[in-house]
Image 1 (cartoon, rainbow, N blue to C red):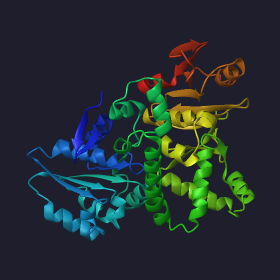
Image 2 (image 1 turned 120 degrees about the horizontal axis):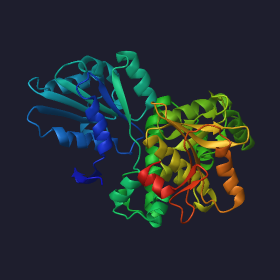
Image 3 (image 1 turned 90 degrees about the horizontal axis):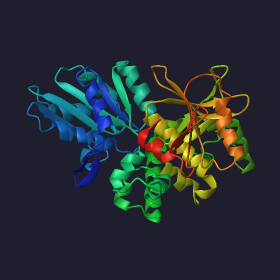
Image 4 (image 1 turned 90 degrees about the vertical axis):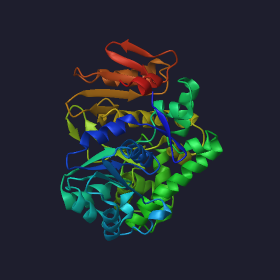
Length: 410
């Protein structure tokens, strides 16, 4: 069970796994970065860490939240240096916590000047992977650890909204996704959708349009809606450009590639490569796109879930596999496709198919047959919402219910 606290009057889950990761890298001359899409909970994790250490007599916390107006005066790295120097206590361990640090011009110069000081630990959050990887690595090399923060898991969603583990709660999670801010709106569809679209527009404006100086905003928004409608399907820049041309927009594949890259850097979407299982190589085109938050994806796609439940489930399964620590690619066989080829750094590998309901022999053969065509001994799973299935064995392939997968893993 996750512990729940009130921070600044707001309900916050103690997401212990993220706090544990922060603790792991303290004291190692390493800058700790909480990275992820805006509004997924990075700020609260930073606040939770602040709550943990500020009561210690040996600690001095310097907290800067660039989304709050009281910190508007901190615009450059010189401003940041001055703010830190004024509040630093060299007799204590100084924890410099900066939320949405990419809003500070040339912030990396300031970080570089402090991170090796023996009385300083630096933990920052950011909402743009390009900023985090290129700007920091150019200035400080590899002396940072990125912790990727995702929106709420199903178990966190249950505890946050005080809901039981049942089919109705799973349906709400499928429909609304895991943005923590939904606690303020409640799970009313109109209010939730308005909030999700507001978050989407904030991310788009601050982390995509402004950062990359995009001028063709209408095309960008059309592209995102196209990707939302085709989540979980194989797409290529050429096919998207051809489709857009059929809709009256003359767009090159290069522009499509760049815009998708910008959306990935802002963590709105994730591009997943195809992997040739037999040839053991990555293909260079035709990827799949998944959304960071399923609720935002649903808000953009519109309509009900009946017509696209397969891709919604696939999106949820993908995100949870990442949460479990897997690197994920899409598997390609001569006979068909494997939804997910999942690996961990130690070499463990599993194959996963995601489906809605295995209701007939044709569906069963498509999901189970493709897995049987893989001639190795790594574990193989089909995850579905088939009624009455919790966890069964089908000739060496594990059939797992979506609810069980989201609560217990593989």
